Length: 137
Image 1 (cartoon, rainbow, N blue to C red):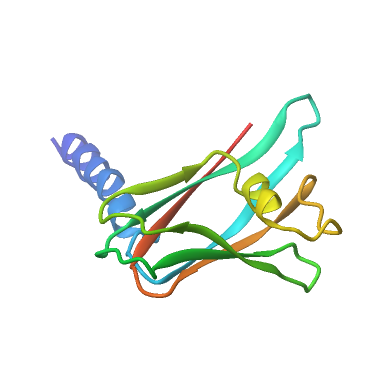
Image 2 (cartoon, rainbow, N blue to C red):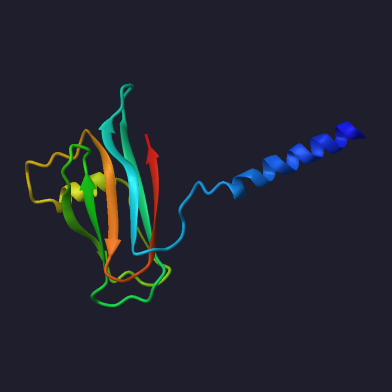
């Protein structure tokens, strides 16, 4: 009987632990930082990329935009770049490779995004949003 209660207690703790650990920042805000975005070749072939999804939680207007800066880790930053504008409430913007997207928006040819890892800071001038990232190969 004691063994059954012990197993039950341990099972409950294991099930409850993820909800007690705040591993994800999902609260809508006017700025979000994704600490590690990558666009680089993989050793065994293929490419590592970071997918981003931005979801708006505020009423849109023509002046509300979501912008981004890229911090490549050498003490500099590149941007700001306008990622999206006029995103409707509860609608999402998604890109399968954020660094490729920033590369297409950056008119400075000296900035090479391929082969880089760095942080991306998203900010808006009004709408509260979330930014969800997924790195994939």
